[in-house]
Structures are given as structure tokens and as C-alpha cells.
Image (cartoon, rainbow, N blue to C red):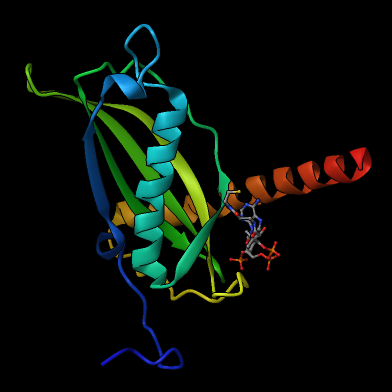
Length: 172
Ligand SMILES: CC(C)(COP(=O)(O)OP(=O)(O)OC[C@H]1O[C@@H](n2cnc3c(N)ncnc32)[C@H](O)[C@@H]1OP(=O)(O)O)[C@@H](O)C(=O)NCCC(=O)NCCS
């Protein structure tokens, strides 16, 4: 039976929101040097992050913000790109999701972290109005640390977003 929207939702643990995605890098994803395009990685980050947010909110979500992303080493055509995501904190209608990107060289049997990003998603209804999300239940020390740190990141990104909004208004 479908869960009633009004029914109390006690929330989910980070593990319950976790998602994993992998894909072989093909020539179409790459620049002329054979390295994956930054935009392709961003696209995959957004999808992997959205899956974790959907699992948490069990609703539609939109991407509100992507924090700084660094690409620390090239991922080449023929290698595997692996993405792991999970919700680090839920606020009222928004959720912060951490997405980690790994390069996997299946010939050498090596895997290393190449990027990580914090992405904020907002749960919305069919009219694109923000709707409340359930709480995130954190239990382990690492989950509690990420949860605490998420508040500082949220304050910084909302301050930057307010600055950007002011600039847009000034420029008309
Ligand atoms: C994200 C969006 C729904 C927020 O709408 P809004 O009218 O600002 O709504 P609110 O002010 O009620 O904010 C809703 C939540 O979004 C969060 N939010 C808004 N802008 C944000 C930003 N830049 N970064 C992080 N969170 C943000 C608010 O903090 C709030 O979270 P909370 O309820 O957990 O405290 C709206 O800006 C939107 O639809 N943006 C376009 C999303 C989209 O299309 N993304 C795809 C790429 S373009």
C-alpha cells in the first residue's frame, strides 16, 4: 500500500540513501587528449547525488547548488568512473549530498579518489514548490561529524547564493 504523505516519517540513515554508479569512459565523453570532460563528470555527479536525495526524500528533487569541484587527476578513455553518493544532512526542505568520484583501472586493479563534491537538492512537489523532508538518522562518529560540518557548509553556500542574487539584481 502506498505510504500516506501525512503519515509520520521517522527518517533514514545515510546508508539507506547510498547510491553507487559506474560507467566506462567512451571516446564521446572525452576531449581530444582522451581524458574525460569535466562537464561529463559534473553531469554524473548530479545524477548520482540526485539518486541519494530521491532515496531520502521519496519525492521529486531539484538541484539547488553544487559546491566547488576539483578534478585532481585525469580519467582516460577505457577506464571506469565510479561514483558513490549519500545524504550527509537533511534540513527543512533541502538535503546535502556528498558525491565521491573514483577512477578505477580494472587492468591494474587500482582505484583512487579523483573528485568529491557536496550537492544540495530541494524536495519539491509537482508544482515545483519545496516540501519538507524527513530527518537523517546519524549513528556513527563519521556520520555525526559530516552532519555537524554540513551546517557550516550550508551557511557559506547560502551567503554566496545571496551575494550572487544581489549581483544579478544589480545587473538587471
Ligand atoms: C531550489 C529552489 C526550489 C529554491 O526555491 P526558493 O523559492 O528559494 O525556496 P525557499 O527559499 O523556500 O528555499 C527552499 C530550500 O532551498 C534552499 N536553497 C535555496 N537556494 C539554495 C542554494 N543556492 N543553495 C543551497 N540551498 C538553497 C533553502 O535553504 C531552503 O532549504 P531549507 O528548507 O532546507 O532551509 C528554486 O530556487 C529553484 O527551483 N531553482 C531551480 C532549480 C533547478 O532547476 N535546478 C536545475 C539546474 S538549473
